[in-house]
Amino acid sequence: MKFITTICLFIFCFGAASFAQTDTLQQYAGKYKFPEGSVVAEVEVMYKDGALTMTSSAGSSVLRFEKDDQFTIVSFDGIAVFTRNAQRKVAGIHIEAMGYLLDGTKDEIKEGKIAIHSPAAISMAFKSLHTQLRK
Image 1 (cartoon, rainbow, N blue to C red):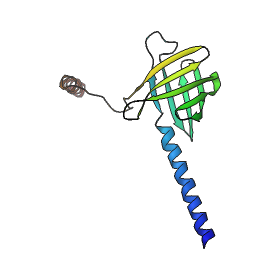
Image 2: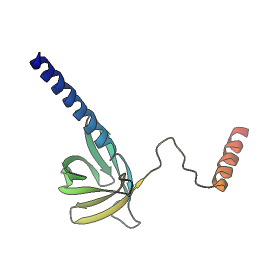
Image 3: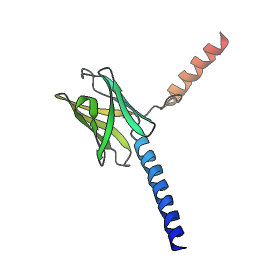
């Protein structure tokens, strides 16, 4: 009976750890924008099939977890360190690769959603929608 309990506990813990790692890696996914004049304008970090990849105009690379919020950019022999805000959410990225240093911020606008911050923006969005529907 102890053996079965131990096996069940092991399976539960392993499953929970796998789910936690997936959830942890997904928090890094998104677009990160860099200041004007940077070597690349933005990078996109994607989570797929249990791994993170980074894509930019310079190319793509797998990100290999090292520790905390630090990853190796495998194809460019560099590092990516994700930064967090006061709420501990991923808010930016610091990249050191091929002699370049980049600091970018995470773009919080999700695909299929619109960020509206003021009544004027809401009014403008409705006018635009109304114009499109009348056509």
